[in-house]
Length: 227
Length: 388
Image 1 (cartoon, each protein chain N blue to C red):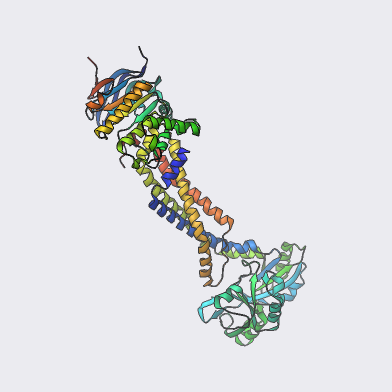
Image 2: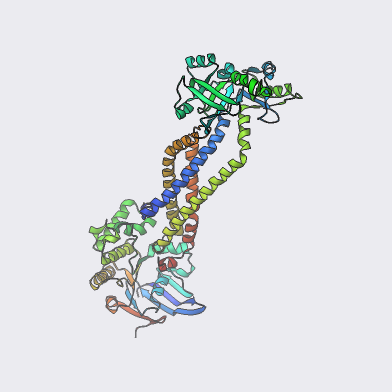
């Protein structure tokens, strides 16, 4: 049995809205083995993004335990959580979230500012990451000079540049046309297949989910288990 | 390096806003600098005063007169090397708006008492020979276009009547804080003789004595000896070293100076508010980006450093532009002030430059506190969910 990268045990998440308690995640328990490309599907408000944020250490569960890459997250402080995230998590956003005043290469380099790599090593990592996503010729372009698909590829390069344990993608194709979306999904599948990266992708698009090895449905905070 | 680049690019991200903010700060620095120059000018006399000159005035008030007869008694006090005296000689040229500082001085001791005066031997001799002659500072000459030999028609205010004085010397000063270059000096004897017909009760009186101490004499001892000499007389004296005397005048303007100091503080408060406003806007617009950075693993201290660095860059930008404007503005200011009674030097010292820069650094730090505190408290999720 392959060691799990993610292990959730009785995780619940509850928000208080206008004095009413809303349960977003209800007693979730599951594991994600290393090297898996998992798609989590579900309608809007089903708790997909919350689940992803809990796994990324961006949000904390109300109860239950979350162990990712061998670290139990619920006991970490904000600072320790940020340091942990630098080493283990690459995050791909739906809206790319590139820094507009930095070039593609500088955006990709950003997470490396937190490492002890030399300038030359950082430059090598950035080149490799951008080459992997097919944007070696767009290094000096600013986000406004790139198409949506290219921006998302820069986002993917930024997520993989520090060689994290796991890539979390929140609706990575949600803002893209079909062709660009296919490019991104092909890229994620390649990263999983060729580099063995564990990828968890949240999506409501069945065609996107089909590209994953495994699909799980989240409905009203409950994860549908395979038959 | 990436963070430094990000800080620099964030700073110039909104060029119009940046220009307006720097412009606003520069105006504050300019006003603050001019205020400091004014305060420095007030205090410059104290710093520049001679150690060997003692000023003796009436103990009751500077405006009361002392008898000329005190001169002989002063001259024999141990430690006194030279005794000089003078009076205010209030005048108007053409009209009341064109007045300036004028004094009636005992010319026989004037140049020895005030070696700050730079004048050619020929002009000095001409002045001493001509009792209707006068000496003017080069700034006053420049103000009215007067040349050597010109006859200046004046209307006396402290010494009634019309006066016609001939320009016999135009001087520069080694120490304008003490010997102003925008003033006029005439013979005391001439002013005194006119009083015999216009105001006989004021004849043979002087406004002040200046006693130069002998080398090696202890000024404190001499000061005490002078006042002791005239104790219990009908016109008791108050003697001070020149520095203390000028400091006394500055202290008498204490309320005004206090107000100017307060005004300096208010200006810096305005600068901080201008910068806080600009920074708060910028941070609000970039909240989502900061959330993304936190997702990537950046800590609150990194974000605080970005905001603080940006704040300091803008503040220093404002300081540099303000200082660049201060140099020409100080010259214009000095000319404008010359329209009044005195012509100031208004020199921008390293201390003023350092103070302006230091204050702006402080403003930069203070202005960054609130936006930085907001960022520190912000969770990653709040940052990512922010809609600008």
